[in-house]
Length: 262
Image (tube, rainbow, N blue to C red; front, side, top):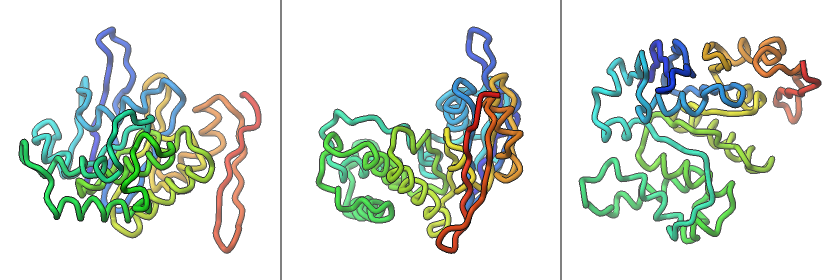
């Protein structure tokens, strides 16, 4: 499956333009990160991509066909959306929450069957949180809830995940778990991802491509190594940074350190 945005622009009714002529494409087995300062329109981009907000001009395409010309059911079978995790006040168990992801495959008023439950259990296993299946979502940590929401999106058996700041408000350990999960979904299961992130290091560690959004609405799209550079981050965030590579346990890593306001 190929997902594209062609010349996407968005402005609020007040006339304030947030996104201007955004274009990119993501194919199979790819991860694309969206970077930009607060207020640059990262979440707005995701919502426009998925048809939750209407592009002012341009459009989103799946395999060359406009999303707006496809049924909601067909779109949500191909694309899974993972919003920012917020503490749940609903008395759903983890298994019930993940089972909700099967709704795109069910008819109106149809109840999930045994096959749907098997798929939900398999998604919990894929993400590594099957041990939580009987726990209430209101009683698990933010990091655990984030993984459950990813499992819920996977239950629709999509080809592409769209994740809105999946590592926000998580500690180091849970950030690493989420990033490892996104990488494993690409490498082991062939599921592509588009994610918003505030962390240039995360973009470098998991991404094949990066979309950079500037406050004035312009956008760049390219490979992670070409886009996430010291001059590029200085221009984007107004901060002097240093990017350093190092090896540990026979693997290579990249660290991004903010030094001073530019």
